[in-house]
Amino acid sequence: GRSEALAGCGAVPSPSSAGPCRDALERVRAGRPADGGPSCAVEPVLVEGYTWGAVVVVDPATDRSTALASLADLATFVSMVVVNTEQQRALHDAARTDALTGTANRRAFDERLTVELERSLRHGTPLTLALLDVDRFKQVNDEHGHAVGDRVLVELCRRTQPGLRSIDLLARVGGDEWALLLPETDAAEAEAALERVRDRVGAEPLGGIAVTVTVGAAVTRPERSSASSLYRAADDALYAAKAAGRDRVAVV
Image (cartoon, rainbow, N blue to C red; front, top):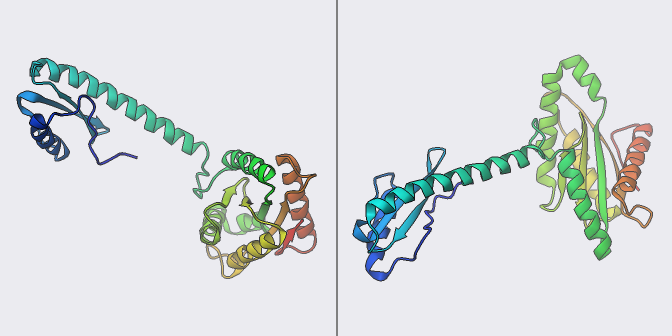
């Protein structure tokens, strides 16, 4: 994000010139013209209309008009670099975020799964991957419309997130399908955590509609040392839970 602090780029002021430069930076911060006197030239760096920082040159021997002209060019260049960096960061975040709910999407989840799986194998700690499906979600859309269905998904996210740890990751990986990554979590711990999720979702209507979720989860084992094998085991558990009547948790 943008920093409110003003950064100085250039020579460090000597004690005799520090005062004028400090005063000039304060004027930049306040949005007023900056004049550091004969020993200091200051040019604000503007990013989309905001004062992001300032470029400062301190040299009593430098002609100020020449310094200011050079500073203006440098400040413009810095501004372009900052804008480009922030745009790249925004694109990076957007490519990994579900537009409807604001959670991670499938791409971000798969990237994190790779990292957590490697950590689990390296340290010998358990990792649980859970898949959550909203039961009969097509029926919700058919009977109440997609706008209501969207509200159900947003509310499901809102109820689920507060119960998660900072190291957990919830992602929307399909229309009504969610994936939940629980690092350092064994089968018993996963079942308890996922039952709490299921209870919170079904406690009261979501978006005005009473819905339930079915959860299938798999914990790492020697035969589940890859992302695909862990996904497959979780998907099989989800299928079994649905076949057993939905609105339940199955952990394998």
